[in-house]
Image (tube, rainbow, N blue to C red; front, top):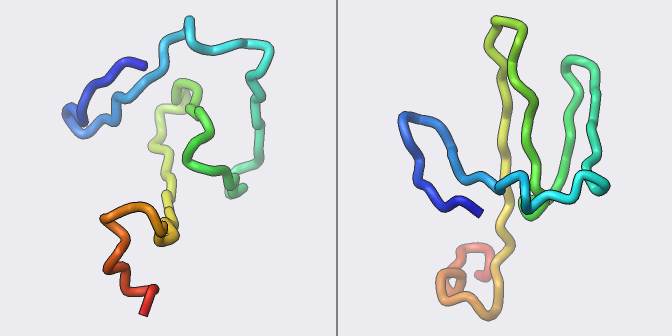
Amino acid sequence: MINKALLNGEFIYRISDEDINNDDVVVCTVKRGTAIFFPDTLVHGSTSNIAQKDRYTLISTYHAPANDEKFDFDFPARE
């Protein structure tokens, strides 16, 4: 994995092509307005935008409090 920070508003954490087994790649072709749900541990990406129009996305995450993470000890949902 190439470890780089956020640069010019672009998220650039990437996995090199050598790290991907193409036999495991699944292409999801969906209609406009379709929602896709997957865990944050899934390696995912997008093809190039060739439409010359902006693409929009909504990213929503949930982090359940963990019993073994110090960060979560005072998590409000525990009360």
